[in-house]
Amino acid sequence: MSVSPELLKKLLRKQKEKTITEREMVLLQLYLSTSGAEAALDAIDFSDMPESDGQPGASPEERYQRILQKTVFARERRFPWPGWAAAAAVLLIIGALFFLRDPAPAKLLTWRTGNGELKEIMLPDSSRIWLDARSVLSYPAASDRKERRIVLQEGQAFFDVTPDTRRPFIVENKQGIQTRVLGTSFAVRADSSIARIYVAVKSGKVSVNWQDKEIATLLPGEQLSYDPSEPAAQLSRMDAAVIGEWTGGEVRLAQADFATMAAAMQRMYGIVITAANAGVSRNLYSLTIRYGKNPQKLVEVISAVNGNRCEWNNRDSTSVIIH
Image (tube, rainbow, N blue to C red; front, top):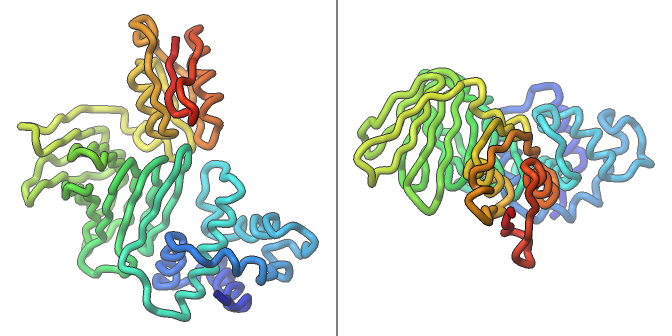
């Protein structure tokens, strides 16, 4: 695939100057979910861009980093990214130019995160989504004049929605349970294997619906757990300030029980942690778990907090017992 360096630089400047159009932003995001543009990187020289600080002798990765520091994608980050993330952002920009020349976008944009990975997504209407580790989310590539619809297929996401009274913002899981808002911030967690969904509101107001029936209306600090197979939804209160804290790149545990700690590690890294005895299962944990860290090191720290030791019981290091 061939991409013109001039087109790339033009779009970078439009992005920096905040003159990028909604269609161009959609196309930028579209390419992040595709592959095939990596071969074009070596053919593009960014050294004469002001954003590269005029250092053509620097490595490609260093030049890409300097360019990204001046763009929307880098400014929106809240935690350190590994080196491949910068390359992925550049692939996004390069591929978008290809689609600018070929106006036939895919029907859906799909975003995925791996173990210990967070991703921040900006929608064309300036709404923001933070996608938690081990999560999958999709939305239409083309804007809909009537609504803004997101499908959280798996995992957890935090939404900061730009108000638009003409177009409701709808988040649904694979079973069709819908969370509807006009402008607010809230978190949704879904499991693809079951129908249960969790919704917690940080600000504003949301309604949760199932088959055209309203299940509950939530205000700040309220959390809903709902499964259509159960007779009633479960409502609870929580500190609104802690909702979505994980979007900053860390999970803080304060006197959390063993089950809560184990669930956080499984959600972040896919690691199954079990207690060797009843004494370990009664432990409480107060520590900060940071994204992007070595999960084996984290498990060692978690074990040492209460004077325990950990034993990995398989070759791929995804299952561990704390003694």
